[in-house]
Length: 572
Image 1 (tube, helix red, strand yellow):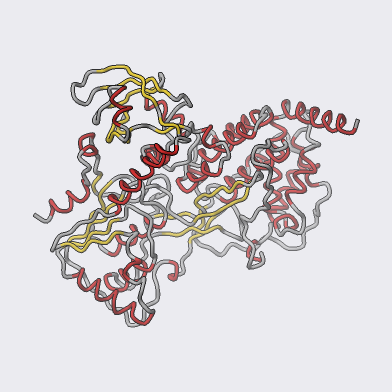
Image 2: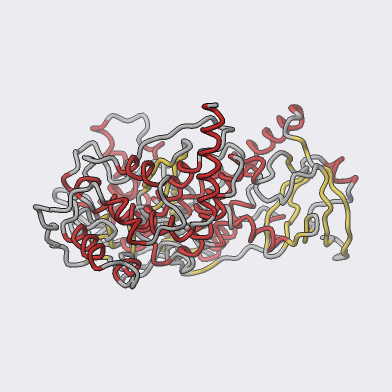
């Protein structure tokens, strides 16, 4: 009887959710506002999640904005002693902060509007948080990996993402304008979800809406990622996406490819009736990347295995022959990842491919070449007292070359190389190469410009500057992300004569923020704003490039490094 009653309550709650998209939207917007501004909730004196979970079950289709607000605030303190802290920053990024949803809402009573305005005017100062606490700290709610979360916890997860967008994500203003409508529709979709897999698809859609390459890794946490991204089979060939087709670049299993008449240089234009651009678009709705260049880059990585549109072990593909340019249809057998022998063979192939790529470098008497993920080797076995001597020697030698190349097409393995030593030897004392907007703890949801020089360049006693007159090349591509983009901006400022060449960078420049979501998920995103000194955007856009280099089919087939070729051409 008890079990029947519990099931009946759950059924009634589930049915009530179907009819109240707007009520839940108002509930979540108001809850997040209170969570981040009310002194008792923001400080942690009252648990915001508990307030949510207790009241979400009481929201019905009969509720309106006023009743929702009253349910959330009825037991909260409404008499505030302290006023909001005074704003002392001269440069504040405030375009994300928009309270029109209640301030211009004609349906809200003057009493409730005054209450919400009072909460904001007496908002909590997050500078008062204990030193071991962050604004982004959230409680973990683990559930068995195959179990669908109860609907109130699914709503809590979506609410926390909405809160991230409104209060923690500095680049909300460049997101798609339709996010609020997407969020409302997702509340309907969430109410109909009957499996953990379907909920993870919804979460992936939310992550993609950030359009932030820092959030790309979210898909790796999904328990059903192989099903969602159709990753149970691997291609018998390696490939590269170029424009509107998949270029076959290597035959991993020639016998399988031969059976399908697939050769190196062939162009696959559709898979099981879907064009490659259509597949890319669909994948972009589940993967978060700051720009399309980054999306194509990650989809082109064989090891990611994200490009396939279905789980069929045999794909029907449309192909344009690389030899004859004739079009033909064929069926290609895929490789089952459970086939250990073939899987191990693929792993060996990929390891060899990646190693060869890592070993690429420019060897030229007139060039000093630095690969940003191979710099720690300079000091790896040195004691601290010898680091300056060794690094000074390396950079003195570099200064005698006709050209210096900084290959930024990877993630830095040592921050001190550019930020300390390249700066120390080559830069003027002041190196204000960017504008850093940090979360404004006095007014969360806004971001303020950090003027302290310590954030821009180190303090070096008796610093001297060597003015390098040679050529400087900075190489970038979508692998250039976050710290790699940041150091690139620094190099561009240190060397005004530098040429930045390559492809659009990842467009995710800034510190990483991590937020726990119910279900044991961790959503990562860019947590501060990084701009050029003239306020030019780097998020989504990427860093400035002097010369865009576009690879053609034959360049991939010939395994060329066009950036290297461009550098060497300039030295002839």
